[in-house]
Amino acid sequence: MGLRELFVQKDFVVTTEIPPPKGVNAASSLDIAKKILRRVDGINVTDNQRGIMRMCSLAFSHLLKEIGHNPIMQVCTRDRNRLALQSDILGAGALGIENICIMTGDHPKLGDHPDAKPVFDLDSIQLIKVIKELETGVCMSGKRLESSAKFFVGGVVNPFFEPFELELIKIKKKIDAGAEFFQTQPFFDKESLEKFLEEVRGLNTKFLIGISPIKSVKMINFLNEKVLTKKIPENISKRIETAENQTEEGIRIAAEFIREIKGMVRSIHIMPIGIESYLPYLLDEAGL
Amino acid sequence: MIITKQKDFDELLGMMDGQDSVFIVGCGECATTCRTGGEKEVGEMSVKLTEKGKTVTGTVVINAPCLELDTRRVLRQNKDAVEKTEAILVLACGAGVQAVAEAVDCSVYPGLDSLFLGNVFRHQHFYEKCSTCGECVIGSYGGICPVTRCSKSLLNGPCGGSVKGMCEVDNKKECVWIAIYDRMKKSNTIDRLSKILPAKRHSAGTIPGRVINGA
Ligand code: SF4
Ligand code: SF4
Image 1 (cartoon, chains in turn green, purple):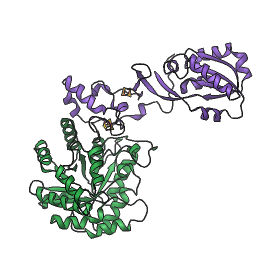
Image 2 (image 1 turned 120 degrees about the vertical axis):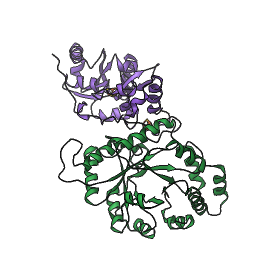
Image 3 (image 1 turned 180 degrees about the horizontal axis):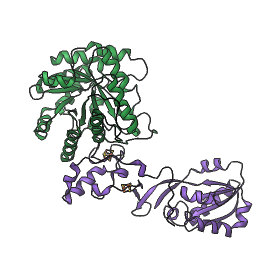
Image 4 (image 1 turned 45 degrees about the horizontal axis):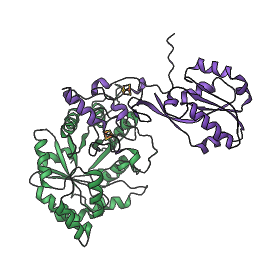
């Protein structure tokens, strides 16, 4: 069953994320995926996330599909121009990859190839619109395709963006362009989530609420300094700091948070950045 | 104005390796303002090259080397020194260097790196606001250019990466989308941002180098 149908059929949709390998052998990444088969509704395949070069999301999405998973192919607009983006989308259609999540992507300067030419030919909204046009059998230049496929297209949201009005304008534009679901950046406390849900109430779309287990004090510092506009709650930092095994404690905190918000939301997206092997444990602890 | 910076001196010497005589050309406009190729910098370059054993056959600061006919005329006026030299070092933007290169037969080298078309605040404080994209779209953005000033040239709103109003790529640079938002808020035109704005027509741009002949 595709992700679109799962959103209709299931009360609670769970997706997660596994990056493709930095190499040609995907065996160990696929091993992790096999351990969570039938336990998650979709696996997000990142596209050179943070500007760090890895196997393409198209190939790894295909490998996940072969073992029975429901891949969500991420496509960022950083590395490819409109020709390359469209041809990859057609490739996904040919391989039966239906779910596509579009984002701009981190600037190459922040990644492992800082001298790369930043492309950004299209932005995320323009690309979502182009995919919807491809579905109707027409490419961006207006030329007809010989055949086309249907896609389930989504985007990303930063719930902590300030001013939020500007983020809201962007969310609405993505919906207008054809986005049907959104992955959010991770939440670490219920109050922020409540505030966000209030702000996006009435929008006809699906939000996969981001959950990210904290693996160390180092990660807290990084998130607080470089990523988040609202700091990780004090009680969580304390628990990680004093834990015997920080990663396992982080997993338990994330699992508790999932249980806490389960009644409030209909879908979550777990981002276990760097600790994918703990996914079965996290799902166990969260009762999923 | 074209903003430039001086090349590393060792890089310059490397380019001129094996050529002992050099004539130096400066620029009286942009490179003078940038303090990279005015009278003073040309004089300093002459001293430094002489110290390294080069023979400086002469120097001249051309008003605006990018005015090709003027450049040819000035070089003709300096014919003796130009004919004696194996190399010409040009302390001007890439356009100026090429104007010189096409007017002479000897080797011509750039002494500067050309950075951007810049607005000038105070002395030595420059800001890139337009990258001459060939089709100005800033009417849709409150008169502020996301093509140039957003690190990702995003046309439909910010990326999610801005932290405390600064750009994710350079935390010393403001996220221009916040500036666009503030301006359009003030002018009561923020609702215009709700429209999906189309992708840039890169064919309107100037690569490969465009020639306009309005004559
Ligand atoms: S839209 Fe193009 S022409 Fe207009 S300011 Fe920006 S770069 Fe310059
Ligand atoms: S932070 Fe702002 S200026 Fe920087 S890339 Fe993102 S949207 Fe553009």
